[in-house]
Structure formats: C-alpha cells, structure tokens
Image 1 (cartoon, rainbow, N blue to C red):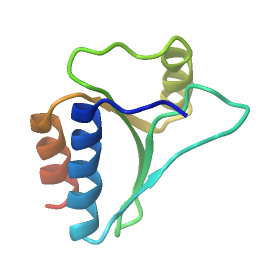
Image 2: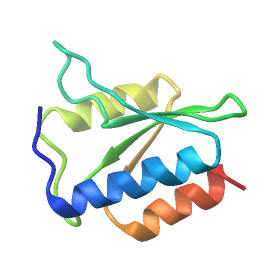
Image 3: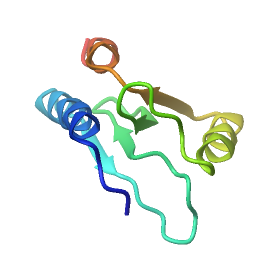
Length: 97
C-alpha cells in the first residue's frame, strides 16, 4: 500500500469528511492483484457511483494508473483525479448540491 504524503492525506481526508457529512460514502478502494485502481469509490445518496484518485499537488499518476483510469472511463464510469483543495470543493459543491 502506498504511503500518503501529508498534503495528499489532507486532500483525501477533506474529501471523505465532506462527502460523509452530506450522507454519501467515500470508500477506500483497494484491489489486490489489480494495481492502478483509484484511491476512492464514491457512492452517493442518490445512487451515483464514481471514482476519485487523490494526489499531492503536481504529483504524476503511478505507471499503471493511466491505463486503469482510462479503462474505467471507457466502461462509462466517471473518474476524477484531484490534487488541490479547490478540486475537493468543486466535487463537494457538485455532489452535495
């Protein structure tokens, strides 16, 4: 399991807490044997499901992630990559509106 940088951890914590306060789930997504999955799967109170990869600012995706995120998108799933508190707030504003 990857060790989160302090800022990445803070971004992820703000996302999880904000979604939880609004009644949504933001579950840690770990898939043994299938590397590159996003950090979080979001299950909204109104039935939407999407994936979020949290990064520290300006940190690149891991080598396996672009292909996996692309596959999820090709399958019709929403996938977001966020690396700023502003992006967290945008997601919260959209999902919690």
